[in-house]
Image (cartoon, rainbow over all chains, first blue to last red; front, side, top):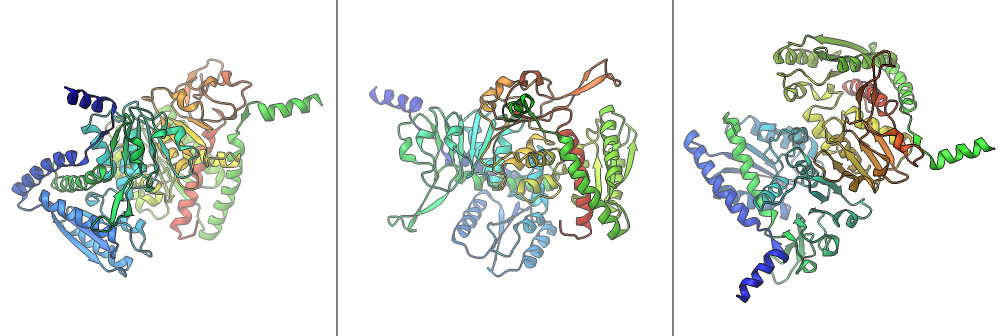
Length: 307
Length: 307
């Protein structure tokens, strides 16, 4: 009896963690079926080409986790590891040949690129139908114009997570901190467009008083890459917080020598009545799942299937 | 003495009107020189193709005012008047031939299009280098990605006007009401991107309490098309207000039988300490000037000139 009462208190007034793995597992179960159906229909797997230039540690980790989930879902992936001194022309030529390869459904260029290679030219080179990361100007422009085609994976994952936990956006006061092209900017469009209907304020490093905006927000998304940035005095009770920060912090107790932390000062939120998507275990795992969904979606669309 | 004092009061505490014609005239003076320089260098004028389908009254008025300013600036314009029942294919074919015509620097399709013609397909057909309205997905995506190419004319005109009157955006609290792809959405990007650095909240028809946002705003842009929408109790002293609304209201005293009004309840702002861009006479005239600037810019860029 005592335990039940306590659990009820936790559910109604305590901090509630949004579980990215749970949502991801649901998505992955569906994607496995889709991928199998595709295989039965076309005698091949949906195929994703992953390009990585150089050997940045974090980038290699991301590429590895993408390949692992592709294997699990049943997506064929071909990883192109190019040396650090690859020229822009070589990279553009590779993309060109992948654009023309009928078996390739999705092309992903792992960012950031080495200095000297124009991200602008590279992203614009990827054919829109294969741009599963959704970062090419044409994909971005379609997003802006309200036609959803390849929607960038992290913003898409955040939307899916809110949907899963039935957290309303319509008419809500939404504050997004961080204006990157990968997260904050496209998310601000998704959350404020017709149908979603949130009222979105986009804050950034030049915002004078971020607390002024977060204090009355129903949803706060923080994507600045600064551990401990968001403290509990900045939000109201009942708020939903999505932590998108990823920072590696030295930790001798870990095998790798570091741990990954987000932008939320978790300690300060203990006993606060908020819903919180934490790092790790929150939207990070959703991002890779959305990439797989975009790949299968692109494969089906290329076959002329209604999606 | 009395008059001087009064005028000082008006300047410091009264309503100050931002004069679109004044800014426009400055722009036009520059554009005439640019256009003349282009003619001297290439023995032809920058050329703008304007396409209008059907005979919507407001659209015809806009097309006429565009042609008039083109004449004044020294831009050749070819107006294609197509009948209401033009098919999508015919329109796409015309755009294709204009894309390929080396003498055409800019292509503008007057919106809205008749039902049955996909705005999406039509805008995507215009080659990005000639998309002087900046509405194609690729132009929009470049804007979103932070590379300014063809920036939509009304948002660009608003930015230019604020610059002219030295109204700061950096670190300011900006509220934009209206999320259209033509005004609110691209303007929210321009005002919040790096360099501009405003903190922008995008409000719309599903926003619960617009006054909650406007009350503390330093800049309010209203683009909803609803006369009298913004009243003086919604903003603080010292606020800058940009009225983008255009509504035709019956007025027997006018030759045309109507007058054009904006979204601001002008009467309520009498004696308020605000800066205000009115309708008519505000950003409307800026929009057409920016179209001419985009056309000359496109012409120079197509000749490989640095701009």
